[in-house]
Length: 127
Image (cartoon, rainbow, N blue to C red; front, side):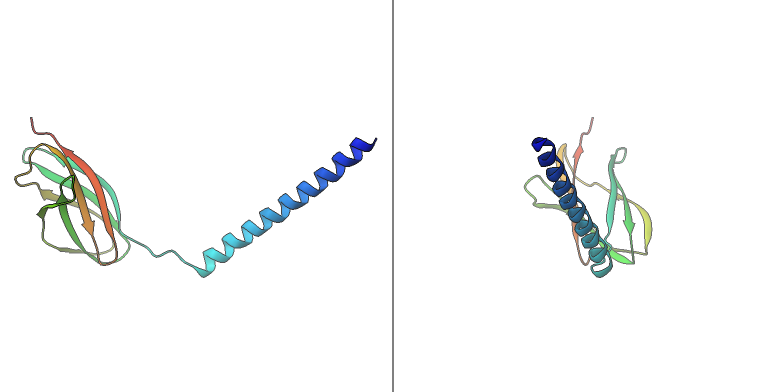
């Protein structure tokens, strides 16, 4: 009967510790959610390369009015092309930007705002 008592004590202690751990974790989540709200940021939803004529299509979701500064970088992050800054209100926006003098290969799209910089890789394959 001694092993049964040991098992019972072990289970009671481990369940008690697990319950305390879960309570502490839930308390921390609720406190962090109330005290430290996450700042909203621009989200680059998709990037597509369209051809004839070659252009870059991107979908962007903005939480507030932002000035977007898109540019193309090569694989070594050297600036290849930079488009004009454009101002957009909050919501979902579709942008189509022409790809001028871009040969086949891999590139990076850099989309910068006042508070962040997002980089996505894309490939150009002319036939």
